[in-house]
Image 1: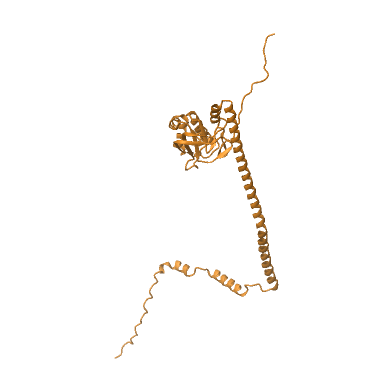
Image 2: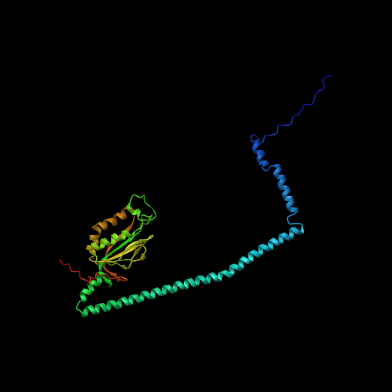
Length: 306
C-alpha cells in the first residue's frame, strides 16, 4: 500500500516564562547598569594607575615629598615649642593680676574697717559731748533721723523682684518703656524711688535697701541696667526694711498711691513684691552723712534814706 510519506510531527519548545518585571524594563536596565560604561572605564583606569604609581618614581618627586614632610614637621614642632614657652608667661601674668586684685580687695576691706572704726569713735565722742551739755536725748533723735546711727525695732519687710520672664519688651505705649530699658519686666530706679517715698510718707522712721541705709541726701538712680543707691550698685531681689509701726505702716503703704503703683506693676508686668510685718528689723548706719548747713552772711547791709 502506497501512501504519502508521513512527516514527523514538529514539537515546538514551550514558551519561556516572562519575568515579573518585564513591564519595567527601563527601570530594570537602569538598576542593573547604574554606572555608565564610560565612567566605569575611567574609574578602572584611575585604579590601575594608582596601583601602578602610588608613590613618586623619580628622585626629584621623592625629594619634594620628603621636603614637604620635613617642613610640616618643622612647623608643628615650632608651634608646640612656642606654646610651651608662652604658657608659663600667660600663667604668670594671670597670677600677677589675681594677686593685684586680691591685694586691692584686702586694702579696700581694711579701709572700710578703718572707716567703720572712725565712725564709731566720732559717734561716741559726739554723744559724750552732747551728754555733758545736756542734749543727749536730742542727739539720739538726730542720729536716728539723719541715719548716722544704727537702729532696730518693729517694722515691715518689702521684697521687690524682677518678673520671672523679664525679657518681654513692650510696644512703646507705656511710659515705663521710655527710660532706656528694653525689658519692661525689670524693676527700675524710679520704681524703687516710689516705693521708698511711699514708705516714708506712710510713717517709716528709717529705711534701707539691701543693707544700704537711706538718708535725706540719698540718691536712687540707674547706671545702665543697674540700680544705684548712693553710687553703690544693687542686685535683685531688692529687700526694703522700714522701721515703724509694722501693721499701720503696711496698711498705709498698700493703700497709698505708691502702694497701688507697685500693685499695678505686679498686675501688668509680672514684677514680684511681698510685704510682711516684722517684730524687729535692724538697719545699719549710713556709710557717710554729709551735713550741709546754711550760714548767715556776716556782713549786714543796712538800708536807709538820705
